[in-house]
Length: 250
Ligand code: 3Y8
Ligand code: NAP
Image (tube, rainbow, N blue to C red; front, side, top):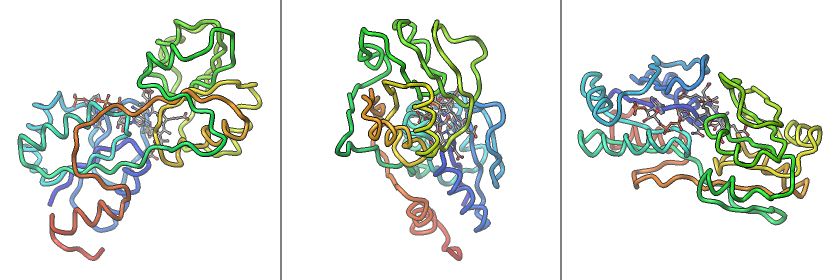
């Protein structure tokens, strides 16, 4: 057995630790979006594969027998490529993916389908917007310069965002409710924009918005073709160690 684990989430890191503890032959894969990603207890490769064809070539050259796609629910490009490569090579694929958040009493959610709709959803009157969607999609909000934007991302962007009134926080999650409440109060936030990432790691801002009675423009996950799916590390381990490979001391 040789597992290729597509990472970039807390679940991926937990699965990597479990595989390393069991001595499973596995390779961890980062896209290389950040300069100093969290080190993993597995041999790690960084960077794209070169599309589906590049991934297929990698699977064959590295003798990969199983893929676990533990990328973020918004990493749709990687997930779609993994589905295509699995279909082409027959290498079994499992997605390790958390459930989306579901609205609770008190949530003031404004569901939108994508970033463009999130921009259009913002009000005309100036607001103080917590834009906690990282740095890849900030540019789209230049169409709404009337707002103050509190921008949170892992690393500061290489050039200033095209937003006249903004403040950048460069930090790596996960985030706590206490910290997000304090942050949103300190900046007088009146509107939140978030991806529906699911899980507790990025959920603090959603709970904080609920407590503060703030509207949340919530971006739905991009569609990904169907593939076998697990929600917990334990399920993923069972899939790997069960009918898909040798039974190790789990
Ligand atoms: C490069 C690896 C772990 C993984 C930690 C999780 C939790 C903290 C919360 C907010 C939301 C956001 C963002 C976020 C979270 C975890 C997880 C998660 C959201 C790292 C990481 C990589 C990335 C890429 C990065 C994106 C950005 C998104 C920031 C490492 C820290 C906003 C997603 O060019 C860029 O700057 C790209 C940045 C993709 C989304 C975007 O569009 O900007 N994640 N995040 C991975 C790689 O190269 O393969 O650097 O250590 C991983 C984590 N980020 O091991 O514990 O499990 O989700 N990541 C979102 O949810 O909206 C922050 O601020 O409230
Ligand atoms: P994406 O748009 O789905 O993928 C774009 C391309 O990046 C892929 O086609 C692939 O390039 C490369 N890639 C993506 N993830 C990879 C991985 N784990 N290993 C190797 N190559 C990878 O990707 P993204 O949304 O930018 O996410 C990039 C990374 O950040 C992923 O690890 C993801 O888990 C993590 N992340 C993303 C978000 C988010 O909001 N998007 C949030 C948290 C963490 P090739 O086609 O050349 O193979």
